Image (cartoon, rainbow, N blue to C red; front, top):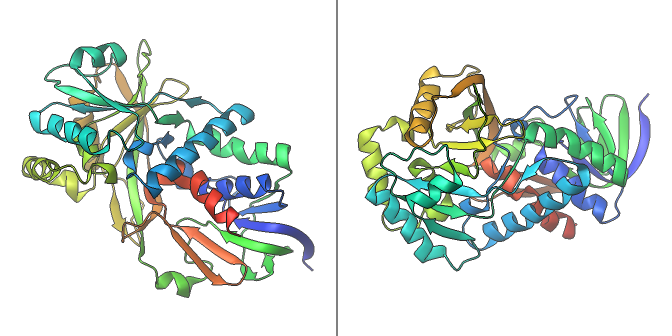
Length: 378
């Protein structure tokens, strides 16, 4: 016989989206229970760079949401004892057309809420000593980006929410049925005032027919971790270059981007075929998190491509000194992605139930800002 319990809000999924909604609901004074089918979160929320990346969002809803999320991250990291580095980001240019895109970004968005400035090569050398200086034309520094170690943060946040706010944790408990106002696992039924489903790529388990109607797919990404073999330099800002310019929406309106995009396709069309853009971030231990690729399908094979890894590493050597590095770990992650390009999917399949999904690769950047809006509108 199933035991019966009560709570104001039930949240399905303990990745960053679910935890952000739990945090916002708890701050409102709601009693909250979080269900996670695994004994700890093992999905996309721990298989990423750990980057809070406002500079990739378009001015307006996306950038505003990212900046509010950033502030929540700062508050949570301080209170929960989570490592967070306010290190910013550095976009590097090695050709005239790449530099032109950065200059256009400044012209378009310099007064739109971004904290960006152009840097000459000598300034970059002082800020980030590991950057490859050969052929460097300049770069754009953004002050707003932060780095957390996602494997630590996603484990610590639910513990802290339980300690501080009394969050009820149900790890290793898969929700089998939602029949509002009841949420049931194998051995428990909870009567709740609202259900928020943040189940990530497991979107076929609950309300499968509803998800069949959504414009949503799954993105597979490949990443790696590298360790310095001798001295461990501070990387400084998280680093990226041209491939990242054409990945994020904030660069999409730069007039020179199509020409730059075409040039890169002529040089190697596989970068676009496998959705590769290359970022590098440094974690608390001084290791580098490197990636990534983007392949879209509802079902992905479980194997990683060494060809894709080689493309990522080869491009990394273009802007980072890698002689002192060795790869210590490779992995892939899978996250839900809306094919329409929308920032999120919010669906209410029945009274009292809200599904939040489809944040794509921006979950760490947007989740707290989005959760603030969702909980305010309960």
